[in-house]
Image (spheres, rainbow, N blue to C red):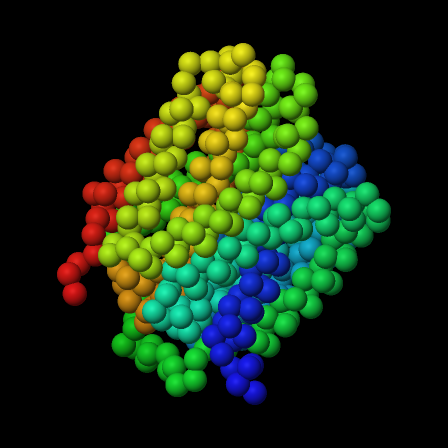
Length: 413
């Protein structure tokens, strides 16, 4: 039975099963248009389901920390039930209702119920991984959170195939059943190391409000929020940015269809790469400095005269846009995977699930602001993507300042 009681089978495998399931939330663009056409509502109105899912993901994680600390099996079961029930409910409202009623049902199912499953499921395996991989915490969380990033690359072609063969509603039913099996398997396998005892609740008293009075925590929250906000502002408009950059180079337009899978792979690579790198650095915060510096450079290059909106639309300008999206995806994924290890470095392991969950509230806020900032900019500037780049460039620079000035370096041990 030793095979079933090691760090891979009790931490890494169940974490991947859970995260590869809940990470499919980022496949939203794959079926957004199909839902819009099926229920007779605008893509913009339907798009709020994704924003709500990210909001409830972050907020449920923020409030679930205490439960996760006490009982990972309870939290993994709740995650499984909420996530798969949300998927099946989404399929139900698509199939049997239309118009505003369908929209409200999707908001409740996909946005609220599934979003809660997302947040609890995202948070649940993280501390267990760091306990089993105590000497390689960055690698451990990178493995798990890489699964969240890989989910899009794995599930997108499957979802497209199911939509074409059985329809959008049936797609949600089938995937709901598949993910239920995968997440339940993760639920049964997940286990903390033998001998680990959670500290007494009184000794590890936790007050969320007081955390925001801590300069280091506030700095981490702000830079985490800005990284997600800027990432979503660009990632959710990948196809449109590429379409603008490649316009006039018709023979290359086919590239656009495969780029999202490529960037999703880099998103996953950033999750395992940056977090593993943090294990080898004396200061994990250095990873965020690398992320913000690379995003600032890539965005500035993309803003060079005539590169995106007013360029000659040739191979070189398309390559610049692709490079930008690759760099942003790398940093977006790396920001997530390095976060738990950075928090444990600054605040210790005793309350890590609570602190990590509270930090994920930044994800909730960014889920409402990131893509909607881009939508507002495009509406106000006649679809000029350069202004989105200007906004994200400024915010990446702010994130760098916060990273250096507020998060700084860890105190000497």
